[in-house]
Length: 187
Image (cartoon, rainbow, N blue to C red; front, side, top):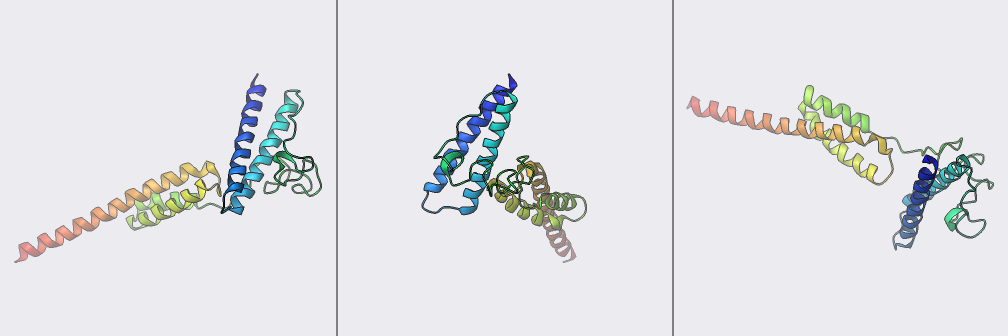
């Protein structure tokens, strides 16, 4: 029973990716990196459908698109075609071996988390840096350039950076008022 649910979910994901890919390709300004990422995700989704179909002893669903164009007719070669992935194992942009794990760009999520924690514990001046880097990394995450599993590290580091920034502002205000009070009492 779980195979059928997983298969249905994988098929829905593939349909959603096909719609997003066609929408991206129809726009006047096409982001080539995003189209390539969507093509790789779509190929991985269809690979998962094939794997789940074999596990459930069902025939795989028919390929969409013209023959020789692979799934969706988006120019990706058909599965098993020469030049498909590394040595025929998996879609382009994914790790060799065909396991369907995407290769993401390196992330600064751990650096952001460390800076955020240090901004609270050791030096509040690191807070704005963690906050700014966290905002940049969240943009990269939303664009699909980095691993979505790193979201929690980015958010935690960013929040710690915000807290560190607030501590810097409060400290500066405290010293300003302390010096003003000391100057007023000296007169």
